[in-house]
Image (cartoon, rainbow, N blue to C red; front, side, top):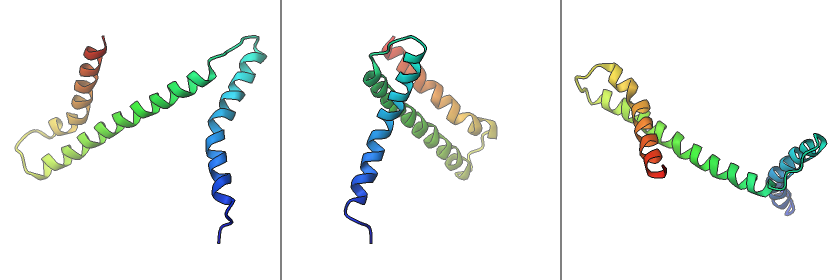
Length: 102
C-alpha cells in the first residue's frame, strides 16, 4: 500500500520539472553572458505549442482512420487518393488557420 505522501511527492516532481528545466536553461544563458527575463513566458508559450501540436496530431490521426474506413467501404477510387487524405486534410487545416490569422 502506498504511503499518503507518495501522491504529493509525485505531483511535486511533475510540477517542478518544467521550472527546473527553465532554470537550467537560464543558468546556461547567463553563463554565456546574456540575461533572459522571460522564462515564465517561454514556459507558457511551450505549453500552448504542445496543445497546438496535440490538436494537429489528432486531426492527422482522424484523417488516417478515415482513410481505412473509406477503403473498407469499397469505394472505387485509386488507393493513392486514400493515402494522400491525411496530408491533404492537414494542408486544408493549415491554410484555413493561416488565412484566419494573416
